[in-house]
Image (cartoon, rainbow, N blue to C red; front, side, top):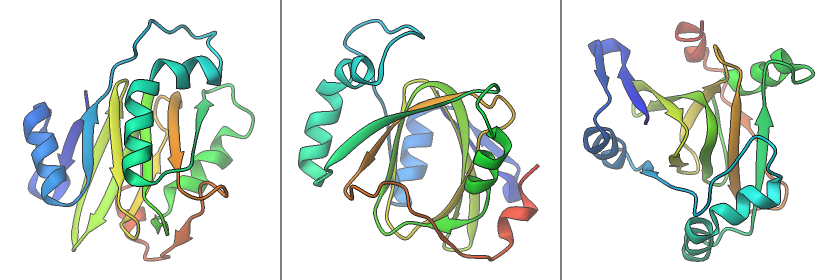
Amino acid sequence: MAILNIPKENIVINDLDQVTSFLKERGIDFSIWEANKPLTDKDTQEDILSAYEHELTPFMKEKGFKTADVISVNPKTENIEAIREKFLKEHTHSEDEVRFFVDGEGLFWFHVKGEVFSLLCKKGDFLSVPAGYTHWFDLAPAYTVKAIRIFTSMEGWVANYTNSGIDEKYNK
């Protein structure tokens, strides 16, 4: 279950309804998804997508998404620090950034209308960040993330970096 942090106000929220409400007020979709069958570390991308098809298919049809894949990184992933650095700078996307955490965890930071907050996403957390929202993502400290990514464009993840420097105030 996700944990919301608003550092400027020294507030931490881990109640599902409060987290969902806070994000919804800011236009960010958040919910919990469950697999329709047990999964293991040995499951393939196809196995994982199949286990969440009952959630994926309706969402993709309703929102016009075209493709989904599974990203999986861990501390042994080659060039893990370079991968982390790519996500650590504040950026936007021309399409919604949609992630579902199959396993592991990751920290999304948001800079929305002058407000900075983070959401620690964990197994079962579904998140849809609207196109144009400034945000960044940190793999640390666990460096273990397995997530379904959903795209409208076949090009996949394309970042438009803001170079604002605000991320540097919060990254560890």
